Image 1: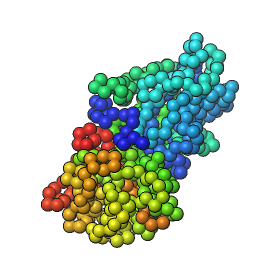
Image 2: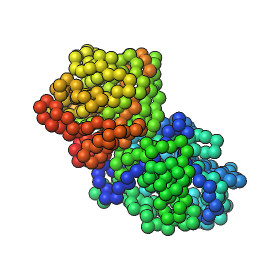
Image 3: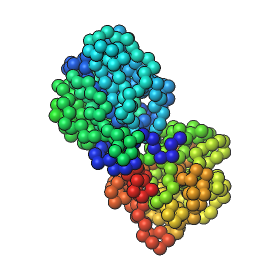
Length: 464
């Protein structure tokens, strides 16, 4: 499991992507538009993606008319394209199971090419992907993609909704482009693929550019599905609200909770892996996708459904077996809802007040001074005196992960906010530059004013 992230930059790349759109398969989120036919032999489809739930069939897009063209992840997490015009299937060897990182996908079609293997190509992070199944199609084949009809984004006509984040979605009608039209390798870190400004591309009549810059729900230039290519090919919004607009992007990757760390918890994940429902049969915890070793860090979480002994805090390990809960082990620190104690190494110590359903609990992680602070609905606990923690370098993995869970056998629901929340925020605090939080990230702890940072890759590059 990645401790930080996989395929995207942890530095300022020069070109910034401001927004993504968060899709939740349990909420039946999608965009759609009615289209007219464009060039069906030659086109390019590019987008950045960060997956949420995995292990189920999820459609990114479907173009549906007389035939249908589907771009999807299979239940085995393989990227696959299916075209009902001749029942052609293409898939590739790569598995998309990393929920911590953003990936760039370019699907390049040119059926006029004299080589069958070049008529539909997939590039992942700027590199040509190795094909597993390549449908043999005739030269000048007519793809069902760009045929007109209904274009669905986030599902197929019959369902199978996508779960995760999408950013910088570009469709080019009539031209086959390689990945360098959309991204480039970083000059200082040549293994890092990063986005570039695509606003100067020729999109073609049916082309579109979705930046997800607006927050409205109408099918126009102010909506979540606004086309900024200049073509006005705006998408209608279905079951998406303004809170689905996220600042978690391919140029600033925010932490989420990690569904791969679910060994015993059997929790369910939603809202881009920010909402966690624990299993009522087990004492459980789940961890975040980013491990922290230095600096001062902040996250908050809303207790949507209370249980017996809900818990929140940090840990140095992922869940490894039965009976392992927050605060069970030597370097796991859990602030408990039923009594306000901190549990560590399977022992309780008095710290703060109990908290209840609908409370927002703030977690302040000071790894420069090895202190941990908590607040309930903006009220700092223990008179601002932090709880001492083991230095990260002396822990099992050399890092701490954010953690939420339940010490008792109850089902609790936590909705986490690492700076790009899945629930409505009324006050709009930041860490000075990044994040959208209900409460301030600055406290007076142990007699000193301290500002804590949102857990994202730009902050990690500067403060981590």
